[in-house]
Amino acid sequence: MLLLCFFAPAKAHGTREDCLPCESIQHAANLAAIEKRLLQVTDSSFDALDEKALGWYAKFQEGGLFFDGWQEISEDVVAKVPEKNKIKAKVTMLALGIKIGCEWSKENAVRKITTEMLQEWGRKLKQTVSDSPENLAVVITSIESEVDALLF
Image (cartoon, rainbow, N blue to C red; front, side):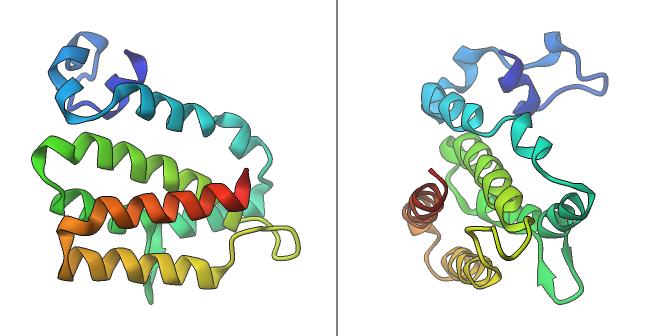
């Protein structure tokens, strides 16, 4: 329930009592799959990052003058998926962003995800959002598979 509270819309005080019950969102996503994805990405991912890497991680998430960050791209993706799939898309994009960002923010010599990969994935997502949003699930799954193959 705690994981769901993090993503569920909450009232101003954000207490657990304000969270949607599991039954209210089960139609939107396979909860076991969401839990599995989130458990793959734990606080230990951040423990491995030094202060410089954490700065790069923040840049990846927030973007910069000449590029959109993962958060903005994720918002655009989630806005285009059907209502019944929004929770699953949001959680998947969050977990994927943590995995990608933690790896990319490491030193060039050791990281398995390059800036070119980020650019390609960003282009794919943006193009799919604008040209064929009905294919977003396929593109997200493809990127997720590619990332998992690199990392696991």
